Image (tube, rainbow, N blue to C red; front, side, top):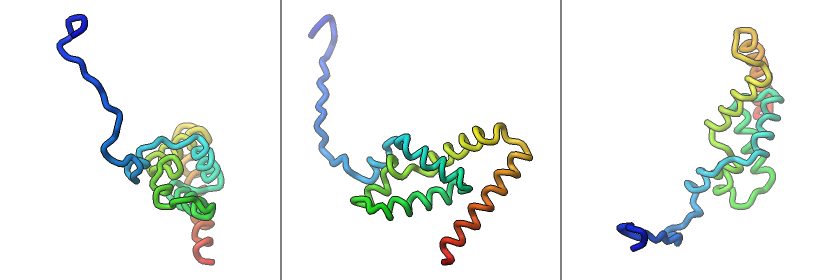
Length: 123
C-alpha cells in the first residue's frame, strides 16, 4: 500500500454488456443543430407536439440508417421534455415574460400551426 492507503482500486473499462441499445441512445444530449431546427419549427407556428411530429417526419424522409435506433437517439430526436424546455426558452426570448397579451399572441400563433398541421394530414 502507498502513503497509508488501505486499498488500491483498479477500474476495468471493459463492458460486459452492449452499449448500443435504444435506452443508451436516449440518454445522449441533443446536438446544437437540433435546437436550431426546433426554433425554426417554432418560428413557423408549431408548438412542441407539432414540432416533434414534423421533426420525426423529416428524419424519416431523409432516409436515416437504422430508423429505430435513430428515433430513440436523443441526439437526433430530442425527448419531449427537452423540446418543451426549448419552446419555453424560445417563447421567453421572442415574447419576454409571460403576461396575458403575450399568451394571446402565442395562442394565436399555435392556432396557425394547428391548421397547417391538420391540412397536411387531410390531403
